[in-house]
Image 1 (cartoon, helix red, strand yellow):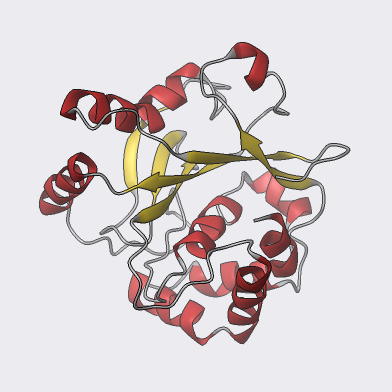
Image 2 (tube, rainbow, N blue to C red):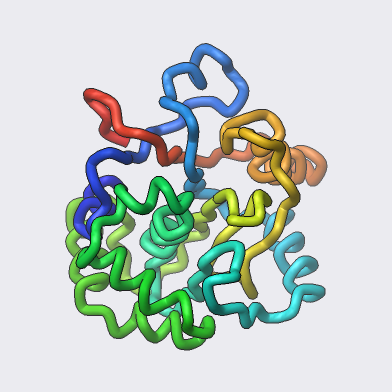
Length: 234
């Protein structure tokens, strides 16, 4: 993901780190803080599929736009680009003070953000679809193995889900294949996205769901977006 982020224009001051545990203090201590966003790769279990269907049935299709939105969400219409969409959800929902230096002007990220903010979700999806710079970066990353390079006819069974702090202080779950962004509740002041509260409201829900449904241990991967350190390679 770091290659793709760099190709889209993210400054080297931020990077994605692999997360090896959500609960082990010694392993969490290896991750620079604060954590600005999480990007999880989660398998589509029967229990999660049922939960998604239940949630989506009661949520209206998202139609938000404009600078007052708490988060910037993209509907996915490009086949097997869920990793790249998840990356955009992490990078384009950075705190304003961080984004000011991490996303330089005239980069692909800056251009996409500028075009997307006033656009409705369908228009945003078209902006991504029509972006040659986004397509080139996505395909180059796929060839390097930075995102899955798959035939569009192949069903992977894996989904990339981003977790970000919105401008309203809430934890938002972001996935382009849903009906819109999902508000998971208010975070405490200074609460880190790898903190116990945020994990419990986000990824912890899926871990509990898998356990209650008898799906066994839920195996997933997580990347954390943080400040870069020497030797970072997430």
